[in-house]
Length: 496
Image (cartoon, rainbow, N blue to C red; front, side, top):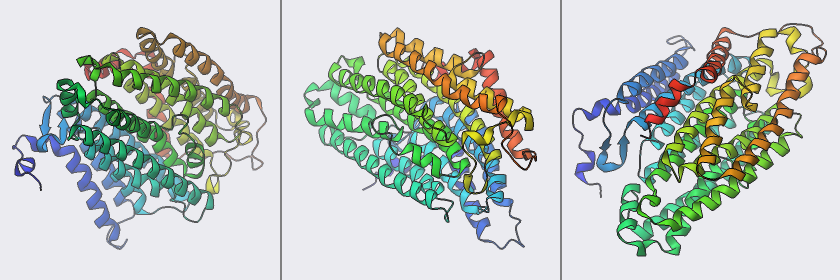
């Protein structure tokens, strides 16, 4: 039975809920608009409605960052600067996804209003997932986000590869959700609560609750998140899903989706910060799991990426390798919570450079995302110099080459690992990062040092919407590489 006080809201709390209500309202308005005949509403109305919803919700989230932390709905939602800053980023990434997909969907004959609506619902799930300390809300929000993306992955309904990718993602994602839910159930069985701060308080007050059942539930919870982030050995779904999904969906997944899952992981770990109370058993077990997973993920991701000739698969294995780098920051954060700021900073840069890179690939893609082999970018520099230059900048950033944002992001992440004593893990990260330079530079060699591969001799058409996305992401990656301190201070203030 629902307690009446959970449904009670003070008048000032409605301002804190505005970003969520606006995004949800944009989704509902888009559903209604999508059912109307085109003679009443033109086809561009739905993406405009969704984009406008992201814009207004993002502005409301920025203003809400200044409000003091507030628990809503009996603690099931938490309004704080961490959640609202991430809400702004989710809305920004959602808006970029709409911009980068509009021309692509039209050219690929996939222009259906369901695409934009599913992106909005997915973003709503992300917003809710990182704005709570209640495990059930985390799970429900994760499923709202995941179910929307399952459909987006299979959005090219007539393509067998897209259907296969969606089915694989659905089956393996459901397995990960089951592991996550079972871990939550074991934690509840040990502590009789789903609220993370209550779990922490009860274990601090009664260490007898730290039973093998509780420890198993905690490990399963972590394993569920590692599966969602595609950490080794739970990475097998990512390359096939990235290759089969439409390019704008792959861009959205590698940027916003990975960001949201890591942010929720951080939120859960902040709630289960047992190191403060001297209960070390949980942290030692967690750190061992993270150390091994980070090492394997960096090594396997970069090693297999060396063998890829398909650009989507190469970037998928590259994404797995970046997950390993991020796990170094997560490991450091279990010892000093300030290290989580390096993870968020890295995720921002990572999302921007991947959205930009996949948007450029969208300009080059043929029907059904054909033309994604290395040979297909041969001579791009002579055909479209600025497009090749932008892709070069994004690849340099992924490799961690200065002055791109990826260099400083890796520096902050690795420095946090050294600070907590994970020196050998950082050394492995540096070596793996050096290895990654090879397969990134190989793409650049094809663009600048190989003859033009396109027999037609025509030019690559880049619509204005894609130019905007590429321009925004490129400017941000360069700016945050040259002048990173402002963004880094903002991120650090979230964990002060």
